[in-house]
Length: 120
Image 1 (cartoon, rainbow, N blue to C red):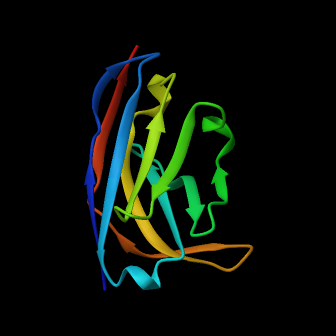
Image 2 (cartoon, rainbow, N blue to C red):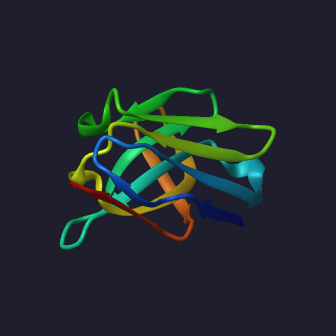
Image 3 (cartoon, rainbow, N blue to C red):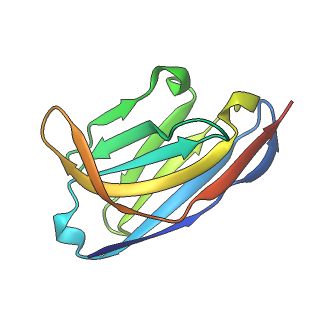
């Protein structure tokens, strides 16, 4: 089993920055990809960014150029640096760990959510 502990989040003004962290423990060897999802009120959960064990990254269009996902293998931690935040980025953000087929990400382990609120 993989355990994920999320930290970061909070309230920030539009244009500001936040960094989320997600520390993994347990069956680390089984993790081949990690990602960040978010869910805004009344909306479906959506993949924001993902990174493979090889370092390949994937972003949803709305955050490209503003968000950066990175991974510290030594600390078993993945980060989401969020810059130029917009009110529409307001959501609960979740960390996930799982696999990558070469085409699709599949995540079976989830961390607790953290609220990100961007005020206008």
